Image (cartoon, rainbow, N blue to C red; front, side, top):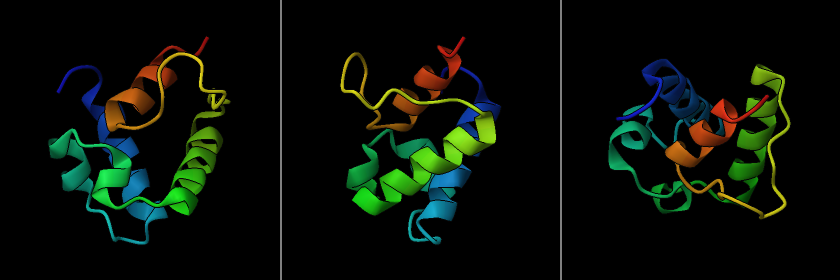
Length: 83
């Protein structure tokens, strides 16, 4: 896994939390699959965005421009690109 392993782990934990345990932390970390493919539904994605924005005090770009928020790597890339 590239990048900050601590950041990736925390993001994976947030996915686990917002899905009420339906998606395992390790599944997110090792699969590289899209969050939807792992079982995160649209409500889960919204909850995840809210949790990330609250925890990291950021505003994620959901406008569709640039990189999407489909995978753990996408989320980490957007967080590390924050000013």
